[in-house]
Image (cartoon, rainbow, N blue to C red; front, side, top):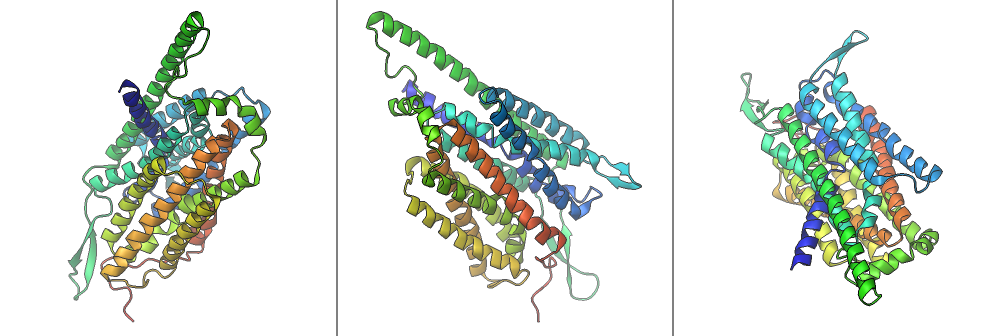
Length: 437
């Protein structure tokens, strides 16, 4: 019972630890509808944010180069503590100074918001090449809890934004003619309070990481004591001296060097390709057009898509904990199925503001279901690939994090000119019939 409780609490702590990886950037995106009303950049702010997140890749690049130049000398716990410290300080300052303006070249700009957003993005980007390799210290099943935490890093900001009432509007009769005007309702609490909520989520994740480290040290001491006692009594080590690891995983770790030397097999390259494509779609390409695919069906359809798709993420991770697929063919089929749903959503975005079945219940059901299945399938795929790469050694998880970041960056940079420069996607006006011939 004690071992089971210890394992359950470890799963919970790992999930909260994983939540801290991308909760900052996800919170910045979710809160955009509120901050753009106050900041001088207006709706050009998403374009600035995209560039800042891209520049945040300097962090993982520096870590990857350091691992190459000085192998074995980079302390991941030290890097993780630095990331948490940077994120906590940035989130605290953001809650206080997010709306401050500074004149630059004769025009007001939100320098404080942009600088702090970059620091938060730097921490998130760097987490992919530090948090995942750190998870190699734990048995394979815990990496699935880590991916559940990454799903929570998107879900919790959405729930907080829904409580805030982001984007609520009502259609009121116009004083001129028979038309209606969109009236945006006041939020339930301010952006400053929201960013303090972000600070609290980061603090919870930090505490989870600290507790995990303390438990590791305690388990290590207990293991050494049991090993010493076993050697004294019968000269043999106890099999359950380290409750977090199974005998199979100990064997795998003992053969770590041999496994890492054979990492670049066709199957592992195939897994990395699937991982890169899936992250390009889920973290860069489709999120850029989510509003265009959902809003023609109404604000309720958009909110349902956001919430249910973010629930599908941790739900898929729970499924992976019970059913871990190892078949390369089945993983490829899951990729194809996810791409079919993603392709449908891209078609809806391209046809916005008049996609098929607009104004019908069937259209709402299809768009919500497509978003949920799209993210659910790819979330399952990413968890399975992460678990399989865990078996290939520490460097495999470093490559796993790097490919996740590279795929996300490629997807964001691919969509940025289409959405923000060439304006290939269009949205309708609220409270008006945009499809009348």
